[in-house]
Length: 299
Image 1 (cartoon, rainbow, N blue to C red):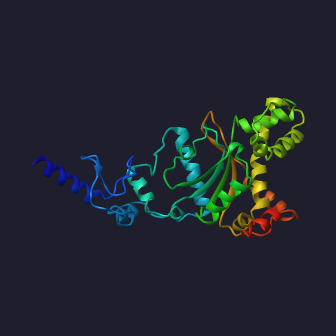
Image 2 (cartoon, helix red, strand yellow):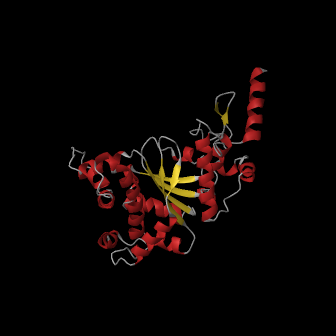
Image 3 (cartoon, rainbow, N blue to C red):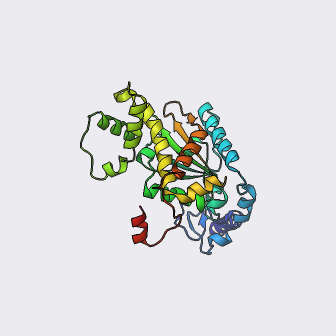
């Protein structure tokens, strides 16, 4: 009798909730929370009974760049004031993600540092399928990062790109110290990574010639964001085109790891960088990939 009741309850869970999530993603059928095993009835993601209900709860994005940016600003304000609502983080959101196209929901692409003090979704009070995140030490824009950004903008169709630097950045600090003669041995793959930061440090040193050492670092962090935006525009014709058409807004920002606040940088400076890149004869011109040999020669 107990076995029959247990199976009946499992059937109710199956019919009411469809395929479940949580730690049981390896269950390709349907997890029964009472019997703690997969039910024998096969259920594919495409026939999950929850799919329609979840889609009804969360509507696809209909945001222009300004509204998407406004949502990010509001999310950070909630984070800083301790009023985060943690949207789209429940089990239903996970289940919906398994059946939905992220391109219908993600409102922003964010490239930022790999630093563990920069939890992107939390600082913008966002959840599953809200932000397409690219992370790399020093938030530099090199080939891999630019390719990821292009995917986020052209295929996930996010209307905003945030190039997010942060205070106390270790990568910028290391390059700044090296610039002032305090070099130390680095693993073989790190120098090619941080060489993108060197122009930013040199520019900061020129602008603030009276500053040295750690006093220069905050300014170098700001210049590094501008450098990443310039590198992106120089090497991504598709991104330039999306910005010119008004489909995408590119913004720079600095996250304060101590206060949790995001300081937004002047959008007018992004336009100036775009205009200068448009005059640069060395900018990439072909927005689409060709064969590997041709692509390598272009760069």
